[in-house]
Length: 124
Image (cartoon, rainbow, N blue to C red; front, side):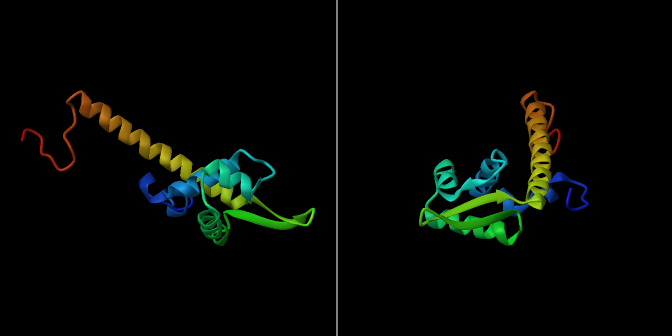
């Protein structure tokens, strides 16, 4: 994990935890050579402005690389995961998996009546 911590909650990076950025990063994980701006926009169901804003945040964090060029006199923007972005996102996903597993186990125990709710005292 990027940070030394006692709990996986500390490794839930806010940059990836935002739902649209998680969708963008997940989509980019499936594309070895990156995705065009228009493909990400369609896949993640985002507007141009919204996608631009999220790409700027991810780019400033060095999680992605953005390449702009012209193809047949038309602008073409391609977005790819950076090496560090892939590593950080993988660490984030591992931490998220641990957090969700803990929650699943707690809910399962509670459903069987074996665990009190948070803040509830046993025998109350």
